[in-house]
Amino acid sequence: MVSPAPRFLSFAIPILLAGALPMVTRAQPPASRAYTPAQIEFTQAVKPTVLAVRGAFRDRDARALARLLPPAEPLLFRYLGSRVTRLSAAELGQMFARPRVRYWGRADGSGKPIRGTFKDLWWPRIRRRLLSYDLVGVDEFVMSGNAPDRGLPGARFLDFSSVGSKQYGYLDWESVRLFFVARGSRWYLKAIDLSHWTI
Image 1 (cartoon, rainbow, N blue to C red):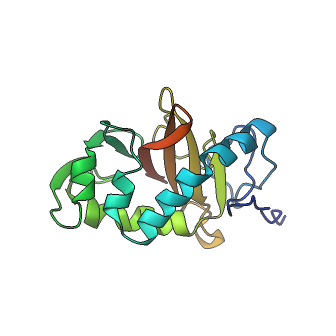
Image 2 (tube, rainbow, N blue to C red):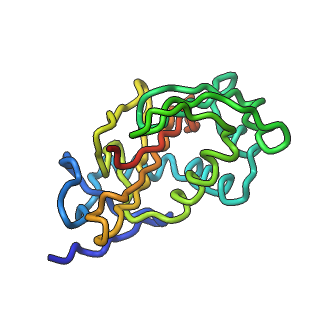
């Protein structure tokens, strides 16, 4: 059965799958469905911030990304929905000039410590997924594996997902979730999650 082709909103994100999604163990990706009116309203409100985030990653402009954070608040980064790393606007803005080696948690499967810089470990993966994806969830997780899918209190999110390939049973999926918070009439980037299939 062939999944229907995704439709698009005005700022080039596909119409999302509404409703809960099961763990992906089947031999076909999830199908795209229509957003609810509330989801469309949110995507339109957050559109300027989304475009700015994608532009910052596209242009490798860490200072531009730092300007999208809430005033005096850090960026929260989570890998596989677990360990939270806080990156200040100052550290984020200097990411390419003075990259900092950090501990990010443990690798899936091997359990080995993950150490390195955000610039080398995560920026390329986030950039690739934000610029090339199949489906976008609005306050819903498009793909799920064994790692926990966690929201963020007080925030709303977009889930940019590649559903993977038929060759690997769609288990080679990857998702980047951008979490946003409103301060007054403006939406800011608060957190980034990176998730994929886990062993």
